[in-house]
Length: 340
Image (cartoon, rainbow, N blue to C red):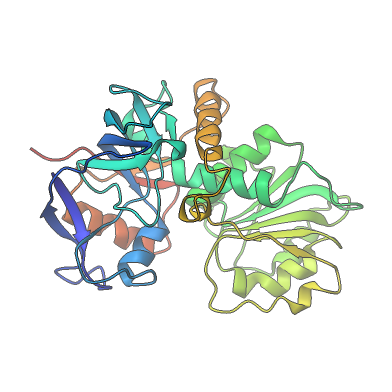
């Protein structure tokens, strides 16, 4: 099979940062599905792994943690899917990724592809939808109010991949006032189009921006998708006492002691935790993706696909990585199919 690999933490403009490579087709075992990959999207985790943040050695590694495709065969213990099923998923951090013609993935991490979306639009969703859902409902527990707080959530980085789906989920599935941050007119409009009640500028002090909205109290929740370390003092100031902060990025340091006076709680989310540790509730990701597909097909959620860059190969993936690293991405960038 054809695949795109990396061997070391190179800059994306290096000639060998990503390479077109050939491997033997993988063989499904246990509860695996063997999926023929039809489309993939690119996430910040792809660039972090390539740069060496999670380096696993010098043998060629296959990146990619978002895919949509067709089940070709199943392992002997699989029971949720059969050959011919159209699926979408984000996979596992510690297994070969989706930037390949074929991929083995545990069926407990997989959902049936939304029937109303093509493969490219479906591939834009799994990692970000799982991350947003797990943060909102498993970590921050937004269904449980913060006493005395305004029923509101601030989503820092609303136009990014995770922010784009988090805005929709919070608007569709909760009664919270949804506040998103964006710093450019086009990204602010993107957030409004997705359902944000308010959009504020994260290039300005967040506490003053939120206060100017005139909410009936301080927000109870902050979902920080980016620059958590830089924004932390402002987040602490704007959150209600006993409020909840959920970050997903990787600040070099994070001093949590200033959270103590307000008894603010910190809730980390890593979408890969369940697969990395084979948790007892690992199949919850199958359940979440099933519900995401239902919401898509009922018209309550929209794909966050913003651009398709062509077939899956090293050159196009390098373009996608560079765009993600620029910090200017809006929604999700997708590649579809392999060139003949």
